[in-house]
Length: 243
Image (tube, rainbow, N blue to C red; front, side):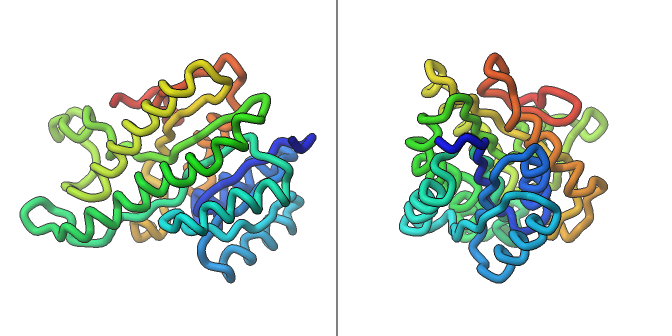
């Protein structure tokens, strides 16, 4: 392993992902900026380096097996190993998503990136994470993935619009997080899901009320948990999010 802590953040060329990379880089970590688009990826790396972050680009399409395999190889070559994986890349899947008028292709697109992509990347990076002294996996979820909040009444904390693609994909991601935490319970790998809150990003047309930096804070906290920290949980700034 590298003597420095190494993190990989997927979808890190903009928004919350970029701010997660910046936050981890500010700790003196080496940070891999995972992104599909070469121009945006390299622009993000340049901006992070200008701010003093030891960043390097990682070409990464979470929907492509060959791309993910190559990314794992590149991380090992460039950084010597991996300590923290932040699965941040995500999509809405498109519109419409309201029950009764949704397109199955929209559901498939959301699940492909938000769930299968996370599994694909996690599986590829696990051999590197297992070699780390204090490995962490953070899956960027959403409060709309909370079944408790989705099924609440309008006056009791109901969250998010009607959706048969994005919201259920985040519920499934939460379930995937629990499964990895269970499977890795006898290791030093801590696996948790994070809710950034209603953050202004291009994912929601910048309608959110929080800044990307605010949205990134919970991921940075979970990425830096002590060895006796929680695993298999779902967290936001205020604490535990109900499933």
